[in-house]
Length: 334
Image (cartoon, rainbow, N blue to C red; front, side, top):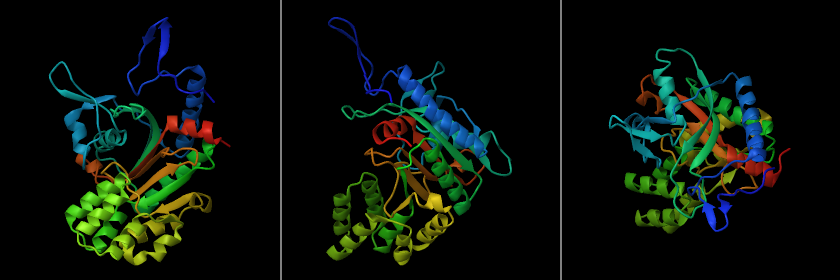
């Protein structure tokens, strides 16, 4: 595996050629290894009938804004020579939703796309994060519910096998579970929204405070927060069926229908939410014991495509290629 990142290089004695924070050069050894990851994923996706789509690096800001269902991701913006605002893509799913709705207007049947593109996001200083994120993933349009969810989870499992990450696991939940749990406790809309934001940030103490301020008794606060922190196998969904309602039943049916080898990768997370508000059902993250952050993730976003034209159910996922590479380097790849 290639060595550690070197963000700067010495040109002459006493002179340093700087790169912007969050940027780096990729040198030949690492470039070959990153290319091998992308090639293995490309082969996996195309073997499953997915075709490559390449979207523009720059899009009109007002077009991308149609896909914003909550808070927009941080992005880089500039003005073109006609005075129109342009935006460097900060997410790959929204542009592909635009493609599905507009370029395939009137198309019957599923659409299966794969992509390997860079997304660009400003990062806070001193966090050591990259502002250029190489993502490779797939989007499935036009297949509803459990059938589409199982297909995507199966593709994820095959992808992990193809890149040798046998220790990786899938944290699987549903974007509706946390709201179902919170509303079942009787809290109001504002508390649900605030708790959802805190859950995205992993701030469970803040959730306890919010629930206490909403008038819940201490034992009820403990019960609700305990549910939101619960992880385990699929039996959790049956054990808490009353609290999880229809979303829990749908997630259980999805997981029960997976191939045994794929199901073995699943860890159910009742409080899992992701940082993008367009998710409407299944959500999941790919985790590896060698790293403290997910390698990628995805989920279902049935309410997004119709904002650009033809309405279609949709589900997909992406892996961050640099994080996959680090998992191979630090955790080993089979």
